[in-house]
Image (cartoon, rainbow, N blue to C red):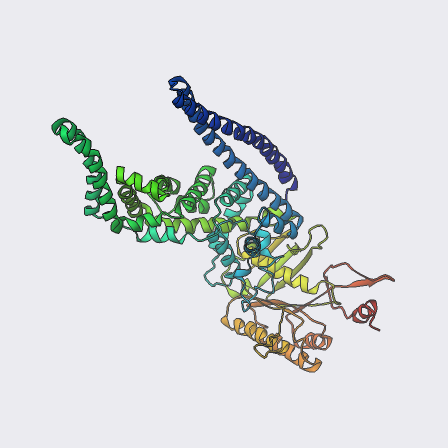
Length: 620
């Protein structure tokens, strides 16, 4: 697949035109609302003061018109909010295709004023809260950060979807990852790639819902709530039935008729006070739930109405054999929560409950919903999280100049899975207009890459690592084609010392390399990536240490890539090893500088540009 920039630029024109039209309508409605409200108040006051029923009747009619205008205006404002978010989503797609990470940041913080909110928005974009320094490959392959896979590919606007995508990037070394799992995800991702309008609609709807926090209260209530007790229900029924006293008093006891209404109000007040002990947990559960439930329901409605053909997506949308689809069961809960909003103001809540036992009704309906549908909610949210992680994986097919569906080795044998063959692979985080693609193959062997400083060695091994990660998520890969096995990925690239732990760079690297060697003992297919091995020690120790590592990693179920400037080590590998491939990058020199072509070629390069670079910066 190839990125279609024109689709998003054309889409943006339509969105902006709709926003202009709706903003115009909103301005007119705002004026009409003000006019009708002021007119209604003036006419009602004038009519009552002057005892002119026709005038205050017109005033009440204007007030009714004001209410209608408020409803219409509210719907238009909702459309404006949706289109504004849809425009931001569209702009983000354009920024991803262009590789403009600064624009992605600007979109993430647009409209925010407080420094705290801006910081949180950047944090959500970068995913730094998921970073694991001791992870097998997290830091080395730029999974999280300002310019990272997460900031490029994450389109999940919910806390649970965002976390699921991060987990998918981090937990690809799981031995439970089967070929069927990957194929199911690839099929789902392929269909999602064919539905960019759906992806934008879903994301914009989620952004409107502001689902940045976990729905913990909602989940706790759904799982733990029970039906209200019979005694509680009886009190609620009494609160309704007590009003029968009024007509009885008017007909049977006319002397007490005037006192019957206050008596009913007092009885319901007592019932309400008594009911606090029974209903309070249900009423408190409503706080903050309404917006989350409404958003989750809307997301499921979009999914259910899209008409997916992929079996895996359909299984996630339809759930686990529920009697009702997710949107319908959540619609029932939305109706109850909407009823609960009537009591959001304490004085109004008091007024409503002394007329009718509203809290008893809300608790009864909530308890019934929880017992009937609540147990399904955790799995429904889990399914949404999985779907959103697939949407993130689908971005690889929508934003790269070229992408391919990875083909995995069918065998389960570790030695067959130690395999990577990429044709025209390129790094997804480098500007697509300038990045150079390369082809490389490793199969139960080790590729040693040589070349001068800045020639592209480190980028090459990162490219192989990132492409493998993307392939294992079920997504497409930036390449013409790619064939590979299901491998554990381990790396030793960005080595940082630590004063707090009294650890030198060399010791830190030893720990990383030791981890790779231990990983090689699991008899699982392994892809290792090592950059400038043992750069922190003297040349003799570096050479002997590197040869020892290569010996331990020379196994049929292991393949890997290593960059080095250690030509003494390379000369020895040519004699002592028969499982090593040699690649190199080269460059040319001019009077003004060095020109790199970033093209990977077979063989060994013994050039060094260190003296030339030092001369360029004035060190001679």
